[in-house]
Image (tube, rainbow, N blue to C red; front, side):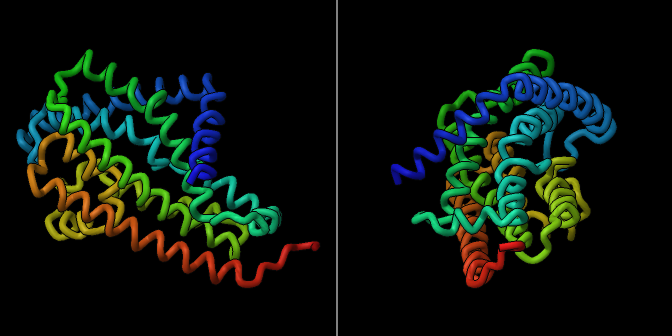
Length: 266
């Protein structure tokens, strides 16, 4: 565990070196938050209570979504591009010689990345949004604690999905097409564009059962108090179950992919 904790810390420090890019990202997320906020205000003025949210809750949904965009890597990036490049170039052969678990190694690195981006790029958009708009942020510390637990579980689901997608590099080499498709599905099904409860009935109920709901919809709903008491534990169980299933699938695919690795030119 000390090794993986060190990897996570190195991941945190590594991304902390990109200060200008982080500041630009936080600024961009804030601007997009403003654009979406005014769009949501117009939508909620026309349809008050849409999707079970009042206007303040909808605006909170917008800025928390912008705050989680980078930590959850909903636009891609993070370890996936690096691991795909190492598979494509054959450098993954060196990784396989290391006496460490490859999946846990990359999760630790991604956890460090997400931790830095949550603190440095995730918090500013919500602070600025709260200064300008009437957000429905909770005052109960336990609600914030439950939100942070949901964020960590959501990150595990996000990592597991991106890890599975990245492993296809072993067979495809060029992953840009499948990464783009996976990114679009993730943006839509996580509730990043619109809360899932705004979808047509059948699509909404289906989307709420899929793993991407764990990445954004559930953490935001917990922050907004849409889950109370035992419902919070049920939401945690939903996220943990998807994380376990997807991590096991990723482990199985890793075993198949690395049972025989042929490095081009070597």
